[in-house]
Length: 623
Image 1: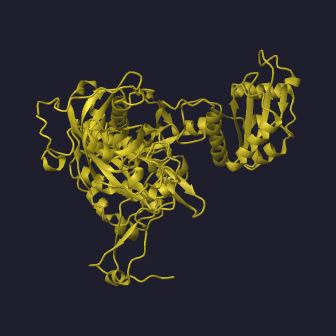
Image 2: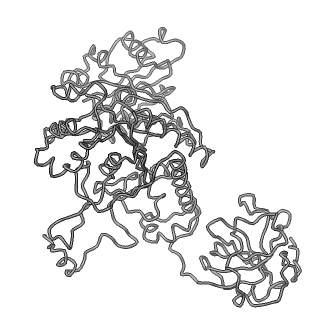
Image 3: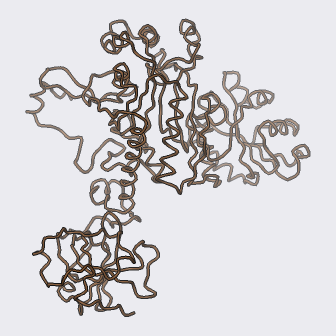
């Protein structure tokens, strides 16, 4: 194909072509970004700067994919039009940084690239300047990267050049900007709170910072600004928010980092529904504005905690598909099956779910499914295959295939199937054990089957608010009560008198979570704002009066100076952007994350410090 020659004098911008060398002129290195160019710019001259993506030599004409943050544009080096530029282009290699001045032209018919926004045009190079060369990168700077994550994290500055990572960073910026604009328009003040604070129990280990000036004393990095935002409510701020950095020294996983970012939000003179309504408005507006391709179910359902555990076995259920659970302990108690009987005698439960249309599973299929259940921690799993078609009432005993050891008449199987909503052609799976363990195992199996059976729409965002969490959880290991949320959470209306009784595990709180697609995205509560109630909660949690005064005396004293009723929520920015970006891990939406062992492979942290620094801090390492 013949590419049209652009006359040397045609700058397209009314600027005479003086032939002046590029390095002698004063304009900026870029007059446009790569992805800004389109057919409207044809016959106009522009200066671009970026990285060499691919370089291709096609028999006398060199093509370079020039990449900057905005995207990619094809640059053509023709020796007949710009011999100096062509000679330079012969030396270019991947990831070299260059500046190019050239004319925008339409691509010849048949050479368009519909996969690129700039695929109908190209830039005919007139001049080029190498701004910096590059070593050969340790992996290709493309979305289809095959490098191990540890290598990507070691060379994070290269990994972030990949278009996918650039899109993630841009999306994160847009999310934070939307939050700020939204809350500003509703009268919230963005207020920064200290990073160096006092160590107070928040549910995880603190990161401690030794003080050089006050020997033997330590600051702590905030697990969250919980007490600080409550003190701002006492201070009369009424509506506060912050894009807050938080730090927790806890075991890591794909959706957890030692340092993370959350939207911290607190309001005075509100009840639970005020907080939930504001949060839902924020999320729906943000998603519809920034990721319109996502499908959103609204309004967000409000799901009581007890109902979520009964139906899904989880306090962060994935609601994009059904496979709801059913407690069949009473029916299981009618059998002589040893596993069921012994479990029930020990206070456990039998619970199951229906895999629709999967009665065709073979023995080997079921063995693999049971192996999966064991990987989730279950001791085993029973099943019923309802083969055939027609109605459940007419299903014959020959078409009801039970797992070994489970011998029951067809009438019992039909009652079980009716209780669980199963039909002929379905597979019933049952697990037995302590209630909390069965919920854990069966929830994992539910998520596994949802994925395996193709029931999940990846473009669907299914949000829900979980409410009515218990105020306390019993800690079997330490033999004491813990806060389910945190100790500043208020009990549900009318439940305060129960704090003096023995049924502390049955007291509901005013805590709530926002969940989406199997992840917890936000957690919040209506707070305690009266000293006497807060002191009673601390006493139930086992704190002595001396501990309460030493750790929480400042906030208790503040409550005596006219603290208003208040509450808030703390949505995680990292997890939200992960879901909106369709990323596999929050590490893909954080510029410089840590590994799952808490290591920073780029800087080599954590690392030892020299003896002089330790002496300044009056610290000594103990083997």
